[in-house]
Image 1: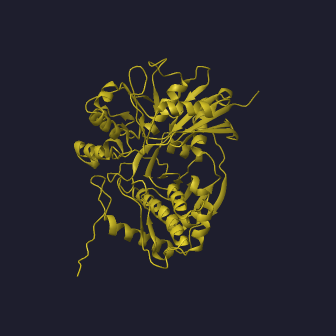
Image 2: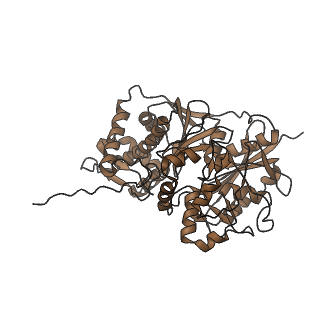
Image 3: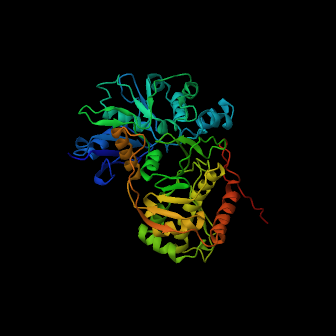
Amino acid sequence: MCAAKVAGVDSSTQSCKVVVCDAETGELLHQASAPHPDGTEVSPHAWWEALCAAGSGLLEQVDAVAVAGQQHGLVALDAEGRPVRDALLWNDVRSAAAADELILELGGARAWADAVGSVPLAAFTVTKLRWLADHEPERADRTARVMLPHDYLTWRLRGGGPDDPALEPTTDRGDASGTGYWSPADCDYRKDLLALGFRGRTPEVPRVLAPAEAAGRTPSGVLVAAGTGDNAGAALGLGLGDGDVVVSLGTSGTVFARTAAPSADASGAVAGFADATGAFLPLVCTLNAARVLRYAADLLGVDLATLETLAAQAPPGADGLVLLPYLSGERTPNLPHATGSLHGLRPETMRPSHIARAAFEGMLCNMAEALDHLRSRGTGVRRVLLIGGAARSGLVAEIAAQIFGVPVTVPQPNEYVALGAARQAAWALSGAAQPPDWPARTVAEIPAPDSPALGGRIRARYQQVHGDLYGDAGPVVAAPTPRRRWRRRG
């Protein structure tokens, strides 16, 4: 009898990745990928085409499949199942003003945190609905259904679309918790907040499935699991334990942990998400992570390997040179219109090695600030699991342990979002009470520094520069703009 096979899909901002695994052991059998278009708004059909391309010859051979997708994106469909416009992605910041409006309209950040566990930022679906209602009201009027990217692909896998627009869409609690109108604590939609965001309109929203519940089957009979958001997928793929905190260094950055109780942070820094197992996933997100290294390499005219070599030649702290890495604005701290900046340029620091070192440390100091937000909400940190493209750099892991002040584990490079989706598919296929136990593999273990003093000095210098330029960027509403400094002449 042939062993069961399962597929996991990671539909990210950049691409669609498909992995096929043995359902019992998690052994990776096959994988493929297809690119997504660039931009902060994309046709949902492009995601479907990428999934069909990446899954061709693979999805036909499996017993179950699940999709983990980029969170928050707004997919607005008309009554015929067609998008009324391109999807607005999580990294589209045009709804920043709408987020401020919504916070005030409900009575402040505390009211939002109590209602849905998170305070809306430009990334959240509810703010994108407000933007759509205010700037494209005719399209808003035609919106009959609202989905997230993973919801849309799960629906299409089951046969939904223009040929069957009546098929009921589904989602899961992990992805629903990123909309701004679903409560992780109450496990229910807040239709009043949906209407608030969409100026009184109440489109249909997907049915929320339990973690191991099946959404249905493909037209050919393959079981389709609930799916989830990308971060919840990564948590499931990594098999997080108590005290484990993930720092993911993709184009953007995330810091998250699995907890037994929901989070409700009125500062807005920690999003109180649910996870894909029935627990919770407090998460801090930054817009800038690995992109900082890529653009620093472009600036210096080198590749990433050479950037790492240069950075290793400069002393820790780069002799006071600091990069504030807000190249695409920033979500945490809430500075959607900020830009990156380099501070402490002197003759001895205007060297490629120092600039390279400042890029590595700036990226990781920003992630350390995110880690502190999670700690402030009571999350214990035993170790950091470092994943994402930038985690493959040995220097990144070394500096991370120094700056974070805790042991750093680097799991074997893998597509953990897609693996998490595959593990969920295996869970739904088995009907078991818990997901299957798939072993994790580690490639590096970096201990905590013997003395935290050096990492503390690097962070203190970073915080000094940030404070001089932005002051306290903590509040979600009315994020500060850079301070002007005037010098008297004469």
